[in-house]
Length: 293
Length: 129
Picture 1 (cartoon, rainbow over the protein chains, first blue to last red):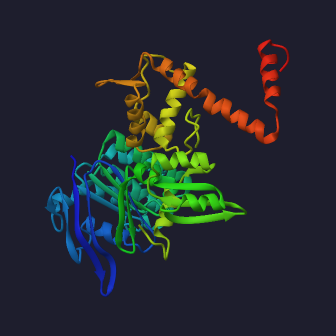
Picture 2 (tube, rainbow over the protein chains, first blue to last red):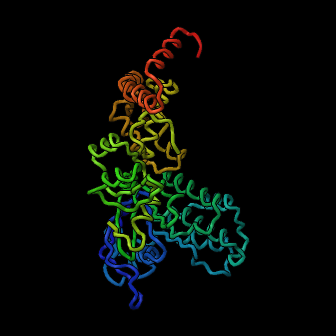
Picture 3 (cartoon, rainbow over the protein chains, first blue to last red):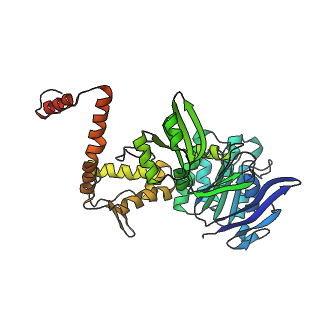
């Protein structure tokens, strides 16, 4: 089942603090989306609204064309996993799994058991006795085994150590290919997970900076390296995101696709064109005092 | 991650381009034979830990170039004349990419062209390295 998501002019205010301001976008679904933003950019507020954990101050959220808030039928299709889960500490892992199984109609018990084994989580353990990494692993297990048509991980995996996180990324990819559905992963650690995303959205100061297919976004970033004066001349008319100098060599990061004529000119000018990692592009686009795009 | 690429001009090499280059290199070296089935986009995606849509883009590039063809419901296969096409393309670029670069390098470090010619001559006759 493909469920589209339609966010229309959503704002989230806490008293006078504006966490999310007039954000609109559409997700057609059945893709792995990355929601990128610095700490405090509004990712969690936006996702909480998307998952109906919170009512937006302005605007509305439509899933499959229907208003989501207090719509139980739609909400059983959405699984929202946060790092600090909603499970009471008095529960055991087994209780948490049982509860999850009753919440999501597509719950796959066999898959849940497989994941519990993978993360070496004992069903008998009390949630209060779990380490941060183990709590993350439990959240991730519930999110994956829910097989909810819309599954959202809000930095839910950041508590896990690196090998466990990589195992999680592999699991998301594998299960997505076997059971295509919508995943939304929020993160500021883009380097690790960036290649998983088909599409990315970047939030900055509560506003949507961009929504783009990740391969297209990657191609928009180019570094130009060479003798400083030739580089300076070359980048005239291009949108410069940042620059670095080493002796007489200069490296400039620009945003925007280069025309074939420009690419050829770099060659004749003896300048080197290089790719920009998604993480670097993100840092440039969202740095303080940056001009944005 | 930088794989063997045959496109040495453009350093801006997205992952899907690298996948396409890898497949091309395998066809040229004979690892992949004509009419042989290529691994699926999902297999590539799992191997490189990338989104399958990204892997699919690499495949799309190769079908557009006529290197691969699709059998509906089965998968992607190497075109019959793929190797010949790729080898010809490399030959076409040989002087520009290999010879011209070598001459430029020789000029910068002061190796006379005559020495290069002598060296090539000596290799041709199989005398010394």
